Picture 1 (cartoon, rainbow, N blue to C red):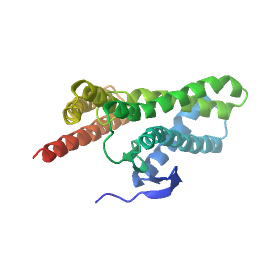
Picture 2: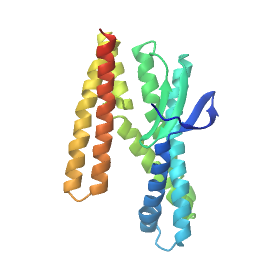
Picture 3: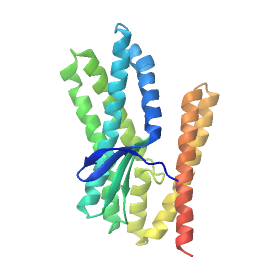
Picture 4: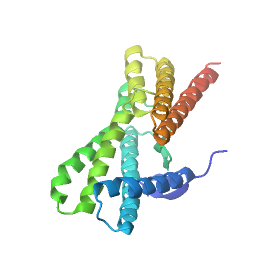
Length: 240
């Protein structure tokens, strides 16, 4: 049975919640920022400031993910597609959009809206860096968020279903073939291929000495493979 999220409230009528896995990642991200990123960037801060900035940055990161998911949701609402909720969890966030997009073009716009929001946030962050050059804590925060939003946008463009890039790829195939079911099948297969690529890359990272990064990449690949495989099973069941 799926775990019930911790509901925070709603935005534009869309309930927003936290999966229990979010708390683990929030603590890990706070620790990594306080123990690695901020001490490397600023060696003369008092220890408590590292932890405060680590927590603030982790919360800001998830706020950016929420905005990313709101990008998808706003476009879906424009097409009068119901958005059941947005849930933040260990891999980021997901907008539970109910039903199929009315066309391949609508699917394309819904899918690409999230990465566009991330790229806009990254551009805004890099543009603001000179403004905060005399305020080291804010400079470090904005610098990190600009970088992470750029990385988030680029990562989500990987054409591995169900990432945004996979949904964009699905929309393109749907537009070319005129067959949404076939497009979903092809996108899910490509998603499986990219999942195996992530797993192999993670193994390579582990043998290169980056144990933590390698395990995380392997876990991410496994997660993508699981979702893509589930999508293929659902297609097979619906075709019987």
